[in-house]
Structure formats: structure tokens, C-alpha cells
Amino acid sequence: MTIKKTIAALSAASMTLALAACSSDSNDSSTGAAGGGENYVLADGTEPQNPLIPANTNEVGGGRIVDSIYAGLAYYDADGETKLELAESIEPNDDNTMFTIKLKDSTFSDGTPVTSKSFVNAWNYAVANDQLNASFFSGIKGYKEGVESLEGLKVVDDKTFTIELSSPESDFPQQLGYSAFYPLPEVAFDDMDAFGQNPIGNGPYKLAEWNHNQDATIVPNEEYKGDRKPANDGIRFVFYAGQDAAYADLLAGNLDVLETVPDAAFDVYEADLGDRAINQPYAGFQSFTIGENLEHFGGEEGKLRRQAISHAINREEITGTIFKNTRTPATDFTSPVLPGFSPNIEGNDVVKYDPEKAKELWAQADEINEWTSPSFEIAYNSDGGHKSWVDAVSNGIKNTLGIEAVGTPYPDFKSLRDDVTNRTIKSAFRTGWQADYPSLGNFLAPLYATGGSSNDGDYSNPEFDQLLKEASTAGSQDEAAAKYNEAQAVLFKDLPSIPLWYPNATGGYSEAVDNVTFSWKSQPVYYEITKS
View (cartoon, rainbow, N blue to C red):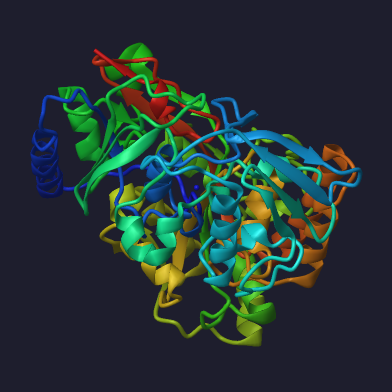
């Protein structure tokens, strides 16, 4: 689920009373800061990792806000259907290598027009400056890391531009609803970091206030003329230190929408909330990643150790005991709600709990290079509440393989992601994915393709990359799915991440709001929410 967008989607765990009290104090002050009597919807959130620039945002905390304050050529409705937003039309040529875009009349929140250059300049900037989502433009002709401008992007006039791809991609229009493809106003290029702190967007909302590590408020953008018109006065995202405190505030009426229920409440939240409880599948995937740069995890030794660790995890027990069956053990690297999903990928028996096989594989790895590390660590962010499952996974590894294994907490999601992004992390770490667009490829290319935007473990396998290419140029969705599933068989040999489970959207809302829907990718459809 980082998410977007490395999610990833936040799961929940218990926090101490002191931490909960600290979070509640922070929330009280942020709520009081609303001023002017605005009737904002109060929703839980997390501090964005970076300034709010679409092509440089690939995690959920920033993604919630970016998707609300910007608009693209297309958007995805609650069911994952692609709808045109700023595009009047997206017309392919005969072989899906050229797309002609015609724009509707629209403006940014400061009244300046959205033009073809607003898109082309933003996309070129993302690639030239190697922003986090730059690889989403890799299919465009002339793409090369750091290139100043993409040969395949041509401005015809203010309302028309063309996109030429280096090879056919029949699902390319479906990708254009993702935030990497949002436009930017000309003023953004004067000072991108400063702009990202106080962005001028073109979406249904605009940013009113961002109090770092506390909250952010978005209000309706009167210049927006699209279909995602807000039905409320605005959304205040409150940044909690832990989900227990957020859940307590929901029950107390101090929070309106909770995206993730803490695991401590799984037994009671449906009784607590009644028909205001949410428990539904969504396009998400949870894992942890073991970078190949870590000692003992490179080459053949690393493959054997990853397989051993995977066999040492009792996914059925953890999803039943800790998550009360609000998670489903994973059988692949994508999500069962996506078209083309298969539970029968070659090699996926490596995710089955098999302690004896785990010991055997670990011993084979020791024959190559004896294990000398003092412990095996899994890093996680405390504000997402992952402690319970990380402890359970670590204990399983410890008891099965006879090595020390522990969880390593970071205080918040941003701190963890900063170390992951900067490649300064020295342990395995929690990862996951929340879909950008409804495709198997979206769960594979960004995370595992060579140079992918969210390839946090720096995995690279030419066979996997070739299969991705064949999938993206397939003549039908069924043919593409078959190639993507072939590619997953390669992943099951290498295990660049350890698949864990598919999460359900488990959230809820207060009696003060109505029309709360959780979308295909687990997030509330914020613009539809009404507040009494």
C-alpha cells in the first residue's frame, strides 16, 4: 500500500496510554484550530513524506491530499472504473503507440488556465529531476533517467498534445488517472520545494493549512468544474501517533472517518459501530522487503534464506489470531480483486508454513556462508500499528530457524520511508502496495522492475523485466494477465519481498457524517462525505 506510492495501507496495533494521551492532546488543539466555525470532516491521516508534488509523492499520507487537491486527465471512481476528468478525449492510433489528448476548459485554483504545457512540462520535470514516480513515464518515447525532455511528448496547441510510446501499451489510458500524471502550473517551476509546501492545484479541493506533524486542512476549490465536486465544507486530516488514539476519538465523536481500525479493536469494532463499520476487500498487498545489499542476502545464499524465512511464517495463524480474519494469506504479489488474478502461480508454495522445509533451506544457505549476523530485524513504523504482526512474524522466524529475530520500530511512517528512500536502512522493512490503477502490472512494475519507482530493495532480474514488457504489449487483457503471472513465477524464485497477506479495508465513521464509501483501493471517497 507504501502505498501511493509505496504503501502502503496502514494497519493497526496497540500503543501505550501515554502515547495515546499525547495524540489526543494534539488532536484537541488541531480541532480547535479550525476557526471560523467551518464544519470540516475530521479524518485520520499521516504526515506526508515530501512536499505535495504529484510525481514526487508515492506514499499514502501525501497521496490522500495530492489526489484531493489535483486533478488529472482521468480519475478512478469508487469501483475502480476509469473516467475522463480534464481530458475531453484520449484517442489511440491503430497500434496503441500514439495517443492524442484533447483537454476540456479548466483552471488551477489561482485562476490560471490548465493547458497542454501544464501536463508536458510537469512530466518532463519529473523525469529530468528523477522524482519518485519518474518511472511511470518510462514507456514514453525517449525516456532515459534524467533526460531533459521526452521525445514522445508534443504540444499541438493549448488544448491538444500527443503522447508517443516506445512500444504499444493498450492499457496506457487507464494509467493516466494516477497522480504521477497530474499537471502543474507554471509558477511551480520557480521553486518546486517551496511550491510543494503551499501548492496551487486544480482538483476538487485546495490546501488551506498544513501544520507539520499535526494536521492538514483542504477546502473546496471554487475553480474546479469536474465531476468530483465536494459535498462538504472541507476535510481536516489529523495526524495520529497511533490508530488506538484515532479509534478512541472516533468512538468519542472527535473524529468522523477512520481509515484503519486498530487490531486491538477487531473483536469489537463492528459491534461498536454497527452499520457504520467497514470491512471489505480492496486492491492492497502487504509484505516485508529484504534488500539484496544486506549481509547474507545476496546471490544464491540470499535466495535460500528468503525462502526459509517465508516458510517460517504461519500466515493462517497470524491473520486469524491477530487480524481476526480481516486479512487473507497471500498467494501472489498482487490482489484478488484485480482482473487476471490467479491463486495458482508456479512456485507460490514458498508462502506455505513449513518449518521443516525452512530449516532445511536455512542449513543449505549456511553451507554457502554461515550465518553470523547478531539478529534478523524487521523495521516498521509505530504510527501504523504494525508491532503485533511484526512480533509474531519475528517469533516464528526465531523459533523455527533458531536465530535472534526482532522488530525494529520507527516513530512514524515518514522516518521509516526516509531511511528506505535514502538507502540508509540496515535491516528488512515493512512494505506493501495500494493500487494506483486497477491492473496486475501496477503491483509488479513499480515495485520489482529494474529502476522501478518503488523498487525499495533494488531488485533486478532481466527475465522478469522482459516478461513485464511482453505483458504491457499484449493484445488483450487476458494475454497480459498470463504474462504478468509468468513474471510472478520469477518473483517466487527470488522473493524480492516476502508476501504476507491481502488486507481488507477495515474502517468506520461517526454518527455526524453520511455518504461514506470506501473505494476499490480502501480510501474513503472524501468528496462524497456529508456532515450534519
